Length: 414
Ligand code: ADP
Image (tube, rainbow, N blue to C red; front, side, top):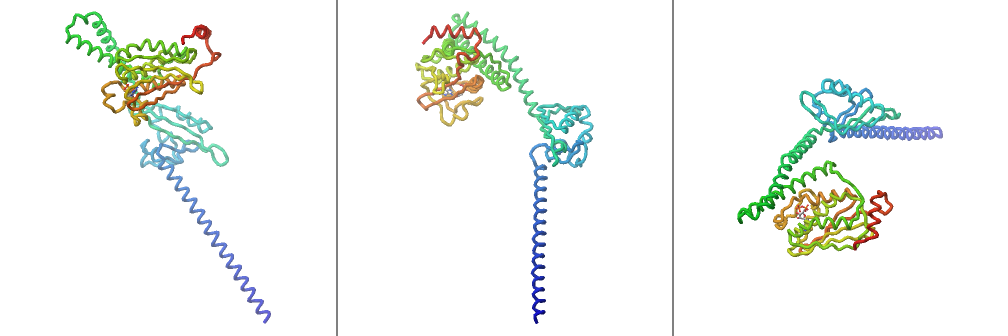
């Protein structure tokens, strides 16, 4: 009896151990399956990422043979339907790249560990020119050896063609429009000076209109050319340390014609006479004249435009130009410094202009390390202000500049 009980206990124990082992096998096989499934999913996602990445990207091994390529690469390089995996890039494009051995050199340099970035390379094949931007990055294997390279490339042909067209347009505007316009303006000016009094009323009106139209066109052409120069980073700046009060005063004297034209008074309220900043005199004038002419243009007849120089709490020089004009609508704030931006009001249309002045002004001010902004209240007026960081007395002046400053400090104006 005792022996039978013992046997059945053994069978029970064996059964429990067997079930436990079975459960373990089921558990681990499920875990293994799940892990595999996750790996497969990850691999699929990675493949999808490479395939659908919205850029022409390809991965090569150490021998410049394709490991993977995005769909964009396949379409950009006309490889649809061709099996390129495992093929050498320079065999796939044997004809196209025959004349460009430098690319093989760059591939080799990247395989040796260098990152290559080429902003513009030009290729001509079958009479068609294309411009390409590309980057070559080495990739590393688990043991940190170079596995090959990843290449990113972008066809910039249409952008390049646009730039070339723009350059051509700017040079045409310069030669075919600006030069004759300057001589027409000169001739009309001369006529106004010499024969204006001998003309009858109609003749005087016609001459006046022609002269004003010519000036407006010249301003437009100059603004377009300046904007283009700024965008292309070709605007020349001659930075020197200047006494800012002197500069503002001189600029105001030269801009009196704007005040006369719009029947306003420029009132310089100076509280500083010894602040010096490093700016380009002509470009500074261009920026300030734009603010002055806008203020005069939008002021009521007989109004006063106040020009104020003061130091801010942080020690910067603030030059403000205030008018009591119509003000600027709030919703125009986000666009006001953009190219060709004009507030959508009948007032603006009536006053004319190109909508380029403030964007040119902003670019100039920022080149001097300054800032520009404004406050405005509809129906009450606007204040545009530029801030510049003054240079300290000992801060790298030339001896001429130092002499000029000492002289001025001893004979202040305000
Ligand atoms: P433009 O004066 O040639 O149109 P700007 O770039 O100098 O070009 O100015 C852009 C626009 O900003 C103007 O058309 C006008 O709508 C608005 N603006 C600029 N300054 C003033 C001002 N002082 N008062 C009212 N509106 C202004």
